[in-house]
Length: 103
Image (cartoon, rainbow, N blue to C red):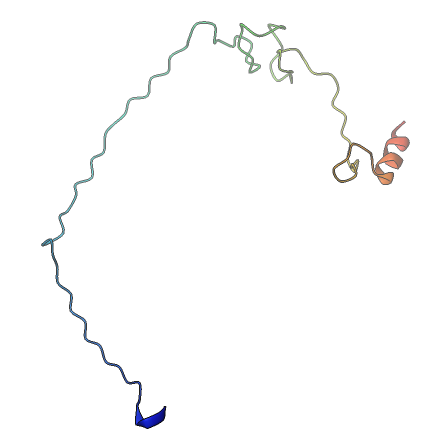
């Protein structure tokens, strides 16, 4: 700096509480009783996940995979390695090869 000026600083802090001592807030915990209510037409007698009012195939055997209407699904085909081109509905060349081998 010119003319012998320097940039020294000193600071002193002062803390003044304006609102007195902080108050302790008591935590309130309410006990809630859970009640299960079965509504009209919301039962699922065969346990397939479809309510009886919408179930097109009642009495499906336990453990059977069902569609959105409660009817058993057909055979599930695994298409391992079958992929599509990015942002497209066209199969990639390697996927076509995999599908041709399955026939």
